[in-house]
Structure formats: structure tokens, C-alpha cells
Length: 213
Image (cartoon, rainbow, N blue to C red; front, top):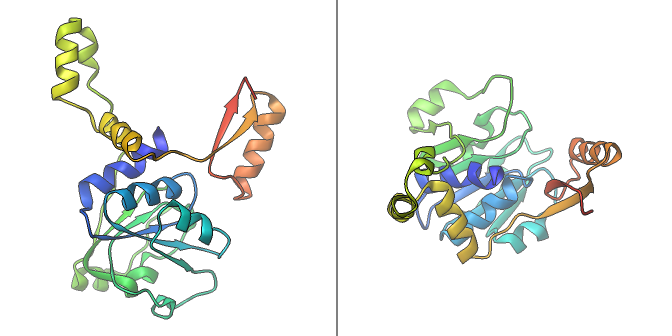
């Protein structure tokens, strides 16, 4: 729910069909962003460090895939057309300016991963090219006051004032979008195994602790 809501909010607020949406990183957020963007009618253009996840990305709906490890000039990647919106779902730290050669004018850059450091971007190119760097919060739940209403009124408001979260779930159900998960036992050993796999970058793609493992 959290991962889906995190990528859903900027996609519905910032993107429109036929936009070229760049997705940086294929992990818990990225693999959902690819599916949502593709089903919304966007070109999902994926940037990942290595070639390891190329086929997975294509299977999820990516129209293009570019491996970036060791590449210092993204002009050399051969991106077919400029990117209109760029979703940063990777936890890796880098200067946003490295992506500027593949962005369209007035592109929107949306950082989504959690980090305690500073965001770095070149000042003048950002101004001259009209790029926007915007934050995005996870999509909201339905207003809690509805729970205090009568069943009839609550049902009415659920229909009329559908929350972003519920819209996301409806869209996902309609287009068969789902998270790819790995299960771990709800034990100390299971938690340790899950955290180690997460730190090593080998999780595919959301870790779930389960009593019924």
C-alpha cells in the first residue's frame, strides 16, 4: 500500500498519457511505478545501474531500459526521446544534473526515496531549462471523519469523495497491477534474513513478514 501510494500520487498529479516518464531504480517503488505509468498510457523509461533487471522491467511494461553504471555522460546512453517526468525511486545518491542531458525542457523531477542528506542539482541549468524539482507525499487515505457518520452517509461519501488511495486500488485491480513480494517467517531469524537481503539490494521487490510462511 505504501509503495503503491508513493508512486501513484506523483503520477496522477504530474503526468498525463503519452508523457515519457523516466523511472530511476527498480525496487519496491520502481517496479510499481513502471506498471502504473505503462497502464496510464505513458512511456515508462527505466534507468537502472546494471542490466540485471532488464527483462523484468520489460515484463512489467517498460518501453525502454538503460543501464547507467559507469556512465558519466548520459548523452551516450542513446535515449530515443527526451524525458518529460523523472521519478527518483532509487536510494542511491547522485547529482540530479547527470540526468539533464536526457530531459525535455520544463521537465519535472520528483524525488521519492527517503534520505537524510541534501539534494544536489546544478543551479543555472535548472533555471535556464525550466526544470521543476517537486516533492510528493504518499496519497492520502479517506477522511477519517467519515467513520463517524451513519452507514448511509458514509456509503454516500465513499462514492462521491473517493480518496486517492481508493482510486489507486481501483486502478490497480482494473489493470492487474500488483506488487512482487518475497515472504519471510515472522521470527527473529526471518527479520534478520529480510534485512540482510534488503541491504544487499537483492530483494524482489517488497519483503513481507508472514506468520503463515
